[in-house]
Image 1 (tube, helix red, strand yellow):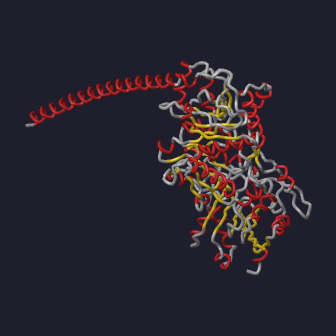
Image 2 (cartoon, one colour):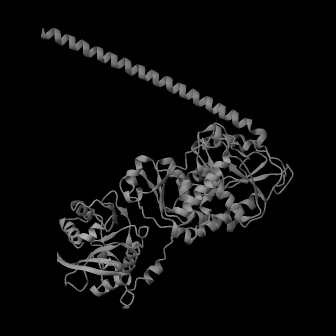
Image 3 (spheres, one colour):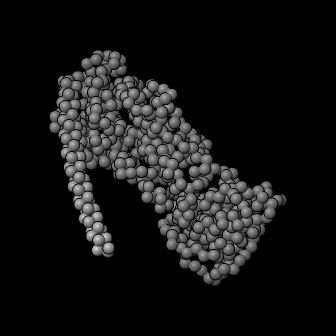
Length: 603
């Protein structure tokens, strides 16, 4: 019986092996057939592309000695997107708006006409502009994203004078251009390609074209006024996928305005002008309302940076990283991994890029003149383009003013040590239960009446959020916002007070500000206290080790710390009065303080 069963099992195993071999052979045959089919498809696509390229011949052969319409330009529109797609990317129109704005800056008398970006091969000049004759070239600034080789009608025809500034070629277009230049090697002769990004620049250089990094003209939009900046209070999440929202600090997510500028539906209108005006309105909204923009969209980040809005830019994939290199060296370009691992600075500063704008506008001016046959100083032009490529922005905040304001007012006390180099507090510091005990001591300073008034708490130097735990343990379910140098908790708002950073919160947003074990590590403490008080919370809880309370010192503490009277004077000068003061002996004597707004002292 056992022998018979064993033989049966052996037969089954052999049958399984034969079947597996047949399946493997079938898989190989299918793979070869698919490979063959794919190869045939590639051949057909190449033949189709070459046929398309050859069909362009009569449209790209240049007319000899045609005049140029010097003050009349073609601007790119996106008419074909309406029948071809169900939506519009407003970033396309934002590029056109920026191009128009730049041309008007160079010559306020410039006139314009619009034509579809992907159909430039069929352009025919309209009457009007700088030359009424149809036998004239219309200049067009090729600021845009050129992407569709299956329909290579984006090539400017012989009625157009293409000026390549702010140009991006996708990988598919790059393949198309390799064939195109074989048929028409003269097309790019005498032309210099101003590449929007490093990926396009690398391709053009490999192809042997004269090229440089021009960046994107959306960076030249005007900066908003100081009044507009002051009145802007909202956080915008632009093009952020839903699965990434959890990595953005809760304090920024809550109340933020979500915008999808890359997928605006065609349902309401079949006219491209509607989307152009919608893009204008969106830029105005950002300019007047945004205190911070977090985005995965290049043509949200770039115009917002130009307008002086703090921006967090996140690349979702490798293609994004290539395109976003238009902002290389100007703003950090974070990845999904950076987001997941808490390496994103969600408290960026607005940047000063005004000198870059001047160079980019002058580059456009000289590039236009050169394309129109005018003589330009090559050395000057090369120097401008080098500055554009090498540009590194300055922070808007004035560090000199920071140092100037750091003196203790009134008493003429010594300035604190102002060494903005390296923080003494390190990422790998081990938090023990004494830190939670400190949070509990501070909480106990609040009276029952004060606790009842609390709805929102800002915890500066929150670490691993022990104060939040204390609130929960005392049955207080409040809106809590933690700020720290390091992402010990995923919703920590990251900020380096010693680099003159401070969260861009709105006044009166918090009832209570907590600073537990923070002040001892701050180089410019008077400035930080002034900023805290400017938030106008009802109460401020803080702890501090004074420099005259112990003969013991700690190497990670900032030297030359304040004396007791100096600290109290700082709060008093900013309209906060000491309500409660308690000491507690750990390794160093620590003072715990509760400050009230002056008008609440009777509470």
